[in-house]
Structure formats: structure tokens, C-alpha cells
Length: 351
Image (tube, rainbow, N blue to C red; front, top):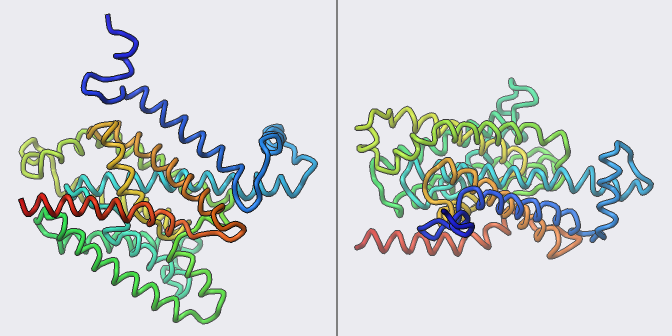
């Protein structure tokens, strides 16, 4: 009979899937709830719980300022950080799988920068105005899709991590320069401030009306990954081996690129450029969840949500009442990890 401990710990030393997912759910919930208490104004547990209880009962409560702070400002912002972290982490997995490269992620490959250029162009220059209220998202999607297609075309059949990173850096630099040029072409200061928001990333000003699209994007992305989970596993064998099993590799790559670009566009259109989340979390979660994509995607989504919510809490607190852009916080953590990974990849190439 299997012991209770063996149900939690696999024979290979990893956590069982059910225990891992439950643990990550608890961690993510704890981080999300804890984020309600911190910021430029620190709140007591009783105050927060009281406001949440009133909101669940459909009433506003006696303290209107406190209710607005928790329900209208902090709660939608925290939910957005959870969704953004989850989406960026899952997109990181998809990019690493289709490129078979551990360094691939939206920020490194220039996808986020491409989306940022599109979003800023829609705001300042009126790109894609035919889309009406959806012009920012659509322009961001076009920019992100163009960026990743350019990177893949320039990368060719090379599997070198260093070449991929250098290519991504070049494409990213191009789109960053384009974004800066568009910002400087803004006709008024209001446009310029609004556009600068997309360069460093921020969740400031998020409201409830901003949540439906990212939520839908996350659910669709999660469903998409579960449907093609086995196909993604086959790509781990290599493109040639995967094709020999009957998998249409090129078609799968195109579909994944389109899905990843759309997901990144949604987040960039809402919060700007946030780097390294899609690099850090998948690498950590592979240590616990393994490489099978259906479990890895779930674990990474939860891990990314917790990570970005925690980073945003620090960004709101460390220099309170001023706020540090979230992109700076994630870069402080992600850049050293990125350097370690590329150093190891370069050493393996030389060997």
C-alpha cells in the first residue's frame, strides 16, 4: 500500500501534481490577499476584512475613502497583476518550446517591445483607428506578432541560445527606439505621459472595466495549452523527430506564435512592458513540475501570478508614497537570472 508521504513526494524527488498545484494556489492566494494590506497607505486586517465583508453583502460601508481604496483601486489592480503574471509565464513556456531555447521569453525576444510600439503608435499617431476602442490592443497585437516573426526568421534553423538572444536584443532595440521616437513626436504633454506608461510598465490606474479582456485571454490561453499539450511535448524531441510522428510542426509554430502574440498584446495594452517574468518562472517551475506541458503550464501560471503580485506590492511600498515602475522591479530579479542562464548556455555551446 502506498504511504501517505509517497502520495506527496514522487519517487524522483518531485512533488506530486495535485499537492504542487494546491500549494501554489495557497501561495498565490496568500500573496494576493496580503497585497491588499500594503502600499502608500498600510491597512489593518480588521479594516480590510470589514470592507470586503461589506462588498460581498452589496453595501458600500461607512468609510467611503477606505472602501474606494480597497474595492476600486487595490483589488482590481491586484487581480490584474495576477492575470498578467500568469499570462506572461505561460507565454514564456510557449516561446521556449517552439524555439527549443531556454532563453526565449516575450521581453528578451522583443515581443513586448513590439507590442509597446504598436500601443504607443495607436495612442499618439492614431494607428488602427478603424478598430475603434480596440485600436490599442489591435496595434499591440500587430507589433508583437511582427516582432516574433522577425526574430524567428532571422534565427533560421540555428538552435544557438546566444544567437537567439542577440537577435532578440537587436529587434527589441529597434522597437524600443521606434517607441521613443513616437513618444517624442507627441503633440502635447498629456499624450507623452500616457505613452511613457508603456515603456516601463505599471498597473497604476487599473479599474474593474480593464479586467474582462485579460481574464478572457488567460482562460483561452490556458485552454489552448491544455488542448495542444501533447503536441508541445512532442516538440521537446526536436522538430525532425516531432515531424516524424506526423505532427505539422510549422503549422503548430504559427498557431502558437499567433496565440502568444495576442496574449502579450493584451497585457502590454493594459500594463506596458514587463520583462523577465516569462523567463524566471518557467525555469523555476520545471524543477518541481517537470517538462510535461499540461502540468507545467498550470504551475507556471500560478507561480507567475504570485511572483508579479509580490513584485507589484514591493513596487508600491519600497518608496511609498511614490511608486516604482513594475518593469524595473522584475528586471532587478530577472536580469541576474538571465545572465546565469546565458552563461551556462554559452558554456554548453563551447563544449
